Length: 620
Image 1 (cartoon, rainbow, N blue to C red):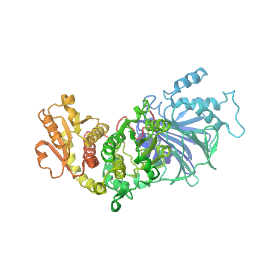
Image 2 (cartoon, one colour):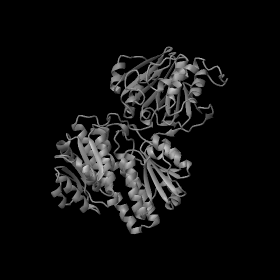
Image 3 (cartoon, rainbow, N blue to C red):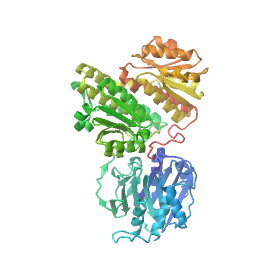
Image 4 (cartoon, one colour):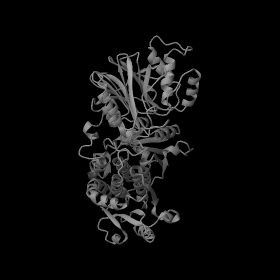
């Protein structure tokens, strides 16, 4: 969950590295650093804190170095301080690297290196990698000769990588090789951007797109060796491979803030257009069907599926839970939802006819990737539901569906969540149409689905009203979010958003479960957010609201437009347009996103860089 950027070309490297790190800062922001090669030596600058601190530190550095590596860190091993920040240099001061990932056998390797006299400066697992490469490079591995076809730097890196257990994305330089960068990946994303006489290596395309639209996406156990004459790609076992150049699917403008103060607000307000792109060409009202091109070849197998398992983490898990309700109600297919982090360590029952759907915005979530591997080993059909084109999940799965919402930079997911729910809705409606839904039922649902973007626009107009609700409640440190049916997962997502960016303790509940324990949390003034839209659970949730009001709780109610009855039960009321039960989460979540956003700002917090969190969880 760290950000890597490296540059080799004709321009000054430092400004390019700093700009790239800014674009990657959502991947980690507790420390940062750069190393630049110039005139036979590597100069390293690093500091605790944000990229802005690194900019101050390097502001007087006018070097015209044209090669360097940079890193923004989200701490795993070792506290976030200057010593533990990247880049790290080996004991000989020749090898320098930046690393994203976790080395599981670092303790064993460190003990072995220490026994050989190698001294360590930091508490990180990353320093083990650079010292291992340095140890091999310095000629201490006498049991193995360097092949004639390889230089010593390349050989030492490959030999070290084959001793590592865990995950890594790496960019490595050596002071003896003034025009060469080696990069490698296993379980942590890494992209090589290929420009006009320049190369940029990064954890994702946002740090590349300003310079080139052409990139190579490295797969696990692959590496690239870049110099001023070109590059080559090979496996870590020294087998040369050919990788195709791919177009980066988004523009620089899409990752700029434009007129918005924060990426989270921008992405909340982008949801109508994002959903229109998600539906575009897929929802075909005239023929009352949905066309999902990425899974066309799997349509028959999906229609005959005996069981579906949806797996994901965090927000993706909440979307999956809504998908479970949709698939069981509309398609009548038994569906389970599993946290990917738990699924991989259980012994799940995967039989013939089981379909596994992996949900991930980034397509790089470590636990979800491991769940996919397990599912494939057991013979399941595996679909990917991701946003990032070319991501690992999109390449590992048998088929899949892209969200098409454009880059999501804000750490707290918003537009990706609504798109995940939208794609699962399209899948459920289409499978239902193929199995048992009448043409009239399918056509009605498609018409309602097509109306969601415009209805979302009407909700966004209430942002200032929602801000006034936040102003009255943001100082409260314990909130409850409650819903029933399709809106129980929506309540979970609303609570997560508030926790993520406001640091307020919030609990999402199935409303009926409140009196089985959590009602004890209600005190005078406790904010209780209810999703009480018209539908099959309406009367029941009114009863739950009354239980909270009787105990002094303050009710914030999301209700259906035109519902006059609900006003008597709401201290604060937010209205949303009417849609069928199965599609309500797509609208009901939007006020919850805005409520979290405004609460965080009122508490003086950085909504785009919440503490201890990073956007893409690429380590276990």
